[in-house]
Length: 458
Image (cartoon, rainbow, N blue to C red; front, side):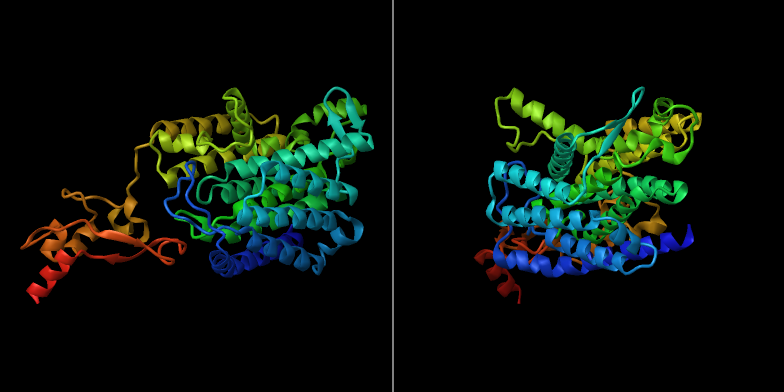
């Protein structure tokens, strides 16, 4: 496992580095062109934040493919398969549609049509589902139209599932990164563990996808300095779907030679192996469930399935009392549990401890959901290394470090008063620089009464 793993790690690191370095200039470009819409009713952030983060992610994708094409253990993927070229073509198209939507807010039906066209472009270049292993029946060959329709449907569902879950800082990128890590372990096992060449492109796609998400996350964690927008969410959704399509329907059950007997018996016995392959719903179970619930909820209310609302899973976590960061971490937990649980079950389906671990972790997740107001505290020796919300609080309601800093402030600033009476509330001026760099809090304008009080003290 030595040399191929190093090549994948190099590809992942280059992709992450390029994405990370491009995100800063892209953020400035988004601010310059005005790609930061006003706050909407369903948004949870408090100030307009630039979008177009997908530009940096697409740059990371291109860099990862270029590097992989020049590595000894990965160049065969480009020589023996047209799937990397198909992925790049479909990704470029869906990325362009996303960029236009981030800037001009194009219609939802136009985006849907663009998603279908991007999927069709990949199908034309060979990235399609050829057959499906059906338990109890065997391998079922699909006609060209059946394979095309199933591939397009899978791409559209995955793209919109990732797009729907992109509602909190760092949520979509983190969940897709977790899903990619689980899927990488599975496809790598198929390629190098069972020498199945058909799993090689999917292994490369998932490694690059991890790099794209890891490079963007430092800029997107709460409070986010930039959003990936539709140009990013649709892009990583398409890459995730391409990885699943690349390996789904192209792995012959007899090629693994794990079971004797007929093809039907082999396929039935290998049901756990094909759990992560039949559809990527086990890998993106949380986004897919959110997508289904959103469609049912909006249709029940007589609204369009594409109408935006605040009924997503992450919105509900905020409503029951979870903080922004805790809601994101809970979604990470459940995504990792489902994705790695499915992969673990596909490898050791007869092991009882796999099921026990999944049940135990599910219980832990349920406890976390029922304790929204519990805030962990770090020990005093580690207070300098954690955010203020995780520090201990003294009797006056301030952290130990904050209490020390507060003693150095003037008394009238602590009490909000001066010798002329209570101060008026400070007004906030909105500018173009600050916390998130868009229209964040800028210089504060003090009242004339406060200015006179200061001049009198001087």
